[in-house]
Amino acid sequence: MTEKVVVRIERSHPHRWEEFHVERRPNANVISVLMQIQRNPLTADGQRTSPPSWDAACLEEVCGSCTMNVNGRVRQACSALIDHLEQPITLSPMKKFPLVRDLAVDRQKMFDALKRVRAWIPIDGTYDLGPGPRQAPEDQEINYVLSTCMTCGCCLEVCPQVGESAAFIGAAAISQTRLFNNHPTGRMNASERLRALMPEGGVADCGKAANCVQACPKNIPLTSSIAEMARQTTRQALRDWFFHDESKGSVITVA
Ligand code: SF4
Ligand code: SF4
Ligand code: FES
Image 1 (cartoon, rainbow, N blue to C red):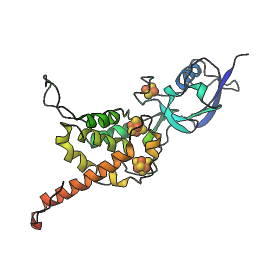
Image 2: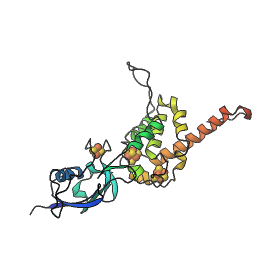
Image 3: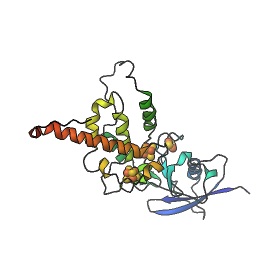
């Protein structure tokens, strides 16, 4: 008898749970099982249903688009191997993002957050700019880890400060601010990025629960990024206060 994989999927339009039994294949991951279901969308009790929807692109845990809750834990479906999962395998969409359909969500707010903190390095023109500035090995070491963020959303999904009515920007964008402020060229726009983290919804809204750092599949040191950005925004606020309020007259030196 062929061994089966039992999968329960949270479906939308209308909301329901559906169970599927599919043939177990060697080295299968959650995406390949979803593809088996897509080819023959028959529930465990023999009802024909619509093929489930999900997002995926790279299939190697780099793009972040396949992120969903697998057995109650937020992770990438492409790197979730069936042999390592308890059955029945439950699949549900991330809850902190607007639902598109079934397991697909809209992560636009993460990209908007990156725009808000200007998570890029402006370059002047498209001509050959030559080699970039040199970076100290210790900067390279931390910047490399920070640069592996794939905007997957795991850190927002587990964060108690992120919600429909909450303005909190989330750990990923805060950490990307650290990355670009720590780059020799990016540093020139550090003040603008820090000012974007100061108003409501910025770094001060973090409740320091540290769920994010545990959920990040890339092991990005999110809590140290948050602490570093809190320090930098405080220094920036002092600089802004000093340079914009000439009536104070006294000299304040800010490191
Ligand atoms: S430390 Fe806690 S509150 Fe702050 S971003 Fe991480 S999960 Fe959210
Ligand atoms: S910081 Fe980690 S958990 Fe958050 S979006 Fe980036 S890769 Fe995903
Ligand atoms: S498909 Fe890109 S991370 Fe899974």
